[in-house]
Image (cartoon, rainbow over all chains, first blue to last red; front, side, top):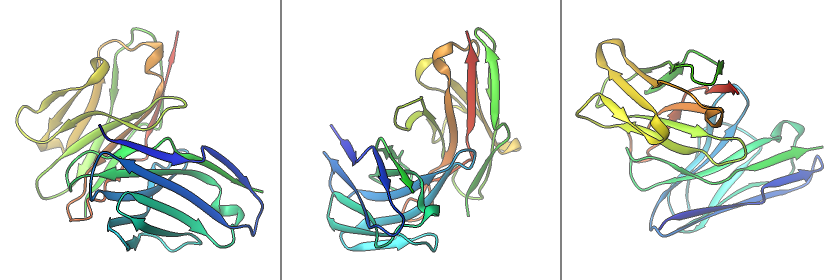
Length: 112
Length: 114
């Protein structure tokens, strides 16, 4: 069966420090991968998506970047965190266009 | 572009009350619609989905939703809620390009009082 792992679950980082959040998917090949940020009362904002290795599309201008070094690995990064980067980050995958999305447990990032 | 809107941001009910959460979509092509649920401390998961056929779809835990094309709506219902239904609920459309970028509503937080 397919599973998705996202870590860490919580993270507290100082302003200006780097960030690396990792997401891996098991049990499927060539998934579409997504990074979302969830804010209270504002739903899920799509940050990045990837349809294949090395293919990254950004949805909103921001201080973050994403990479997909392997088929089932998706990484969210920042060179220097800002206070405004605090939030709840979700990784998700899909096998097709109209299929359901499967989500990781999320990472609660607090930048202090 | 596809979009969805949810009318209720926070709903508070007592146990055994009936539930209806509103969702309206804006899309001109083939309509596929989803409801996701996020229980406290758990990951976001699929509650039910509509692709085609019977407009009344049934999901897990006694939830159902009705697709009404003339009203552009896909409201979520449950006849009698339980305390364990306390969660955040999201309506979504799955995306219409190869990227399959799902679009989510702002979410409705449901609090069920015991």
